[in-house]
Length: 297
Image (cartoon, rainbow, N blue to C red; front, side, top):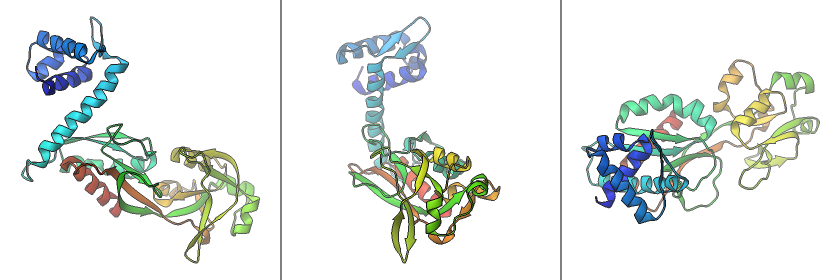
């Protein structure tokens, strides 16, 4: 059996946890499938599956090999797709990483339109929200909020998120409403820290077109957008949040804007992807679509 077919078989066995089901899907005898995987294990020098009478499961080494095979097969499919011409619809799996809150409130609600437009594309969506190794982890593209550090990635700006200062009514009843920068010395903020550096992001405001910072006190620091919003809702302090991601809380009175004259600068939203190869049609379709979603929101 050639290497390409063996890799396809391996991926199917891993997905279905069955030699028989994988063989049926690929139209081969189950005995041939089992023999081919045994030969593959001898070739790579490790056991890829743990076998029981009921099913087969990947070993730790098998999981690593699966990631590699998935990338190789996707690259081969991408190469074919580049030369099939526009007459064929984009197809295949798009592996995407998104910030959790932006995914839940903005992108996922719009996904049915993408599925209708591209019925042959399947989305594999992760919400880690940090700049993962796209190539190493087999991610086709990622959406990121905020200013990006220099990297070997292509970054395409797809929108801006207006930020506002806000607090829960319970906090404002307890501590009063701040109106000026001087008032902040009597208030607590919820701090957001970077997983990458461990440093708290400063409390920012724009004055005469320049971004400035002010020192604040905090009872808690968090590193995820969901926790940041939850702390603000719980009345733990003031927070600077993208309006688009808290519109429901503003509408139902769970949060209120404060200090509207001292807002932070809008946050850029970017989609990033590796630059070492031409974008596959399936990835290009998703990138263009998510740009449309951000533009319309």
